[in-house]
Length: 139
Image (cartoon, rainbow, N blue to C red; front, side):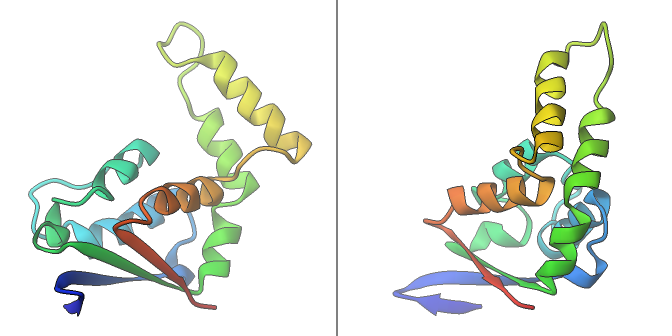
């Protein structure tokens, strides 16, 4: 535990060399943050966003979270275009409550080079919590 202006800081370490897929990303998040809970974070960007508000697992007794992400370039490649396509393609098909037009548009954007990868979405979520969460990228 570190302190910064009387605020407590929890530092977690993500090992990008072992983040080779979306499930392995959430496995690391769960290993680093959720040991003190009787439930695990699901493979969901919404769930990631929720947990970064704090109050869960190891982070519930701290004010700030510092994420040190080693070998981040490996994770960026692993959570890139192909993983993102597979993520969208795995969404339920016709007849489901999931917005198929949304999925088709996201896939089209990826193919055109204008869409966000899963990695970029994770970065955007972390950045949206910059008042309480910091990210240190390590090669």
